[in-house]
Image (cartoon, rainbow, N blue to C red; front, side, top):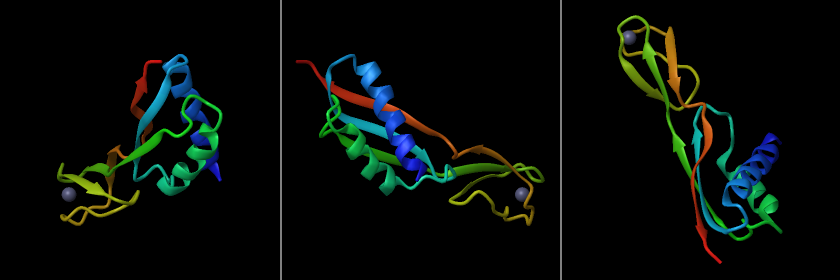
Length: 111
Ligand SMILES: [Zn+2]
């Protein structure tokens, strides 16, 4: 389950940036093409956050769609899967976005 590794990385990134402050909310952006299950990340996040300044923090996951440009007609399209077909019939697509996985922001409380 690679979501566990992802969750560990997210927790360590946020812990580092929070510099000891208590974290109450983490917003994560996961592309639909990243092959990551948001529910699994959420589950692993809670486990990894235990005994860190992130313990009890809420995790908000924003799923971003895959975006591609058709190489034939230049149309920009969105997809939920890493493959597809342009309405013009072309399947040769240039992928622009949708595989990213990043911490968008997080909220801390000063103590
Ligand atoms: Zn097209």
